[in-house]
View (cartoon, rainbow, N blue to C red):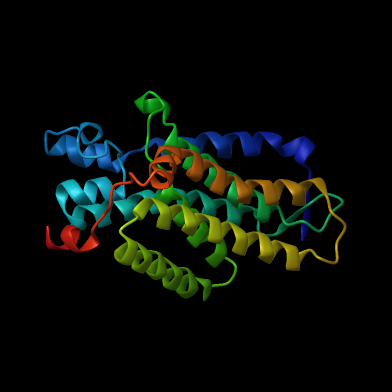
Length: 238
């Protein structure tokens, strides 16, 4: 492992933040709707995300939207990992990739939720967050791909049974956050707490904060018994 000086190389993180944010700003949902001469923000729930696209244009278009949004979160994570996987922060044993990949992923999610290209009005960030966790958990341990996929199927099953897509999705991101935090805890349990490790924990936890904040209206409706149901069966039939 090679030492990495944050004081000398902070500009690299600045460039990564800008590039990742710009990636997050790209909205495939808006592009698809525009091609169909429609505005997805004025249809259904108004959210330019997977579920609303699926309800309006069918599950195939919704799947395409989900995959694109997931990729724009996963690609910055993978790039950051392969650049910094052989580095540790100077004076510590903390891997730079453990901070860099979630830093890039979070910037991509922020770009999706608050895109400067669309007056800072974007989607809920779920698919992009899933892409981040999928890439981040799998880039070091390949078989995590199957575990994450299995858990994603569990989220779909939850939505299928309860028809509460918002609740299933925010619980999904929360569980992924907990899994990564636990992984970091056991990885560095014999090491003294450092500022970089605290930053890593905060970055991972921030995904829960951002996605839950983006769903705040859904949560209020859910607690008030007014949340709209999402029938996956109807979407598939459509």
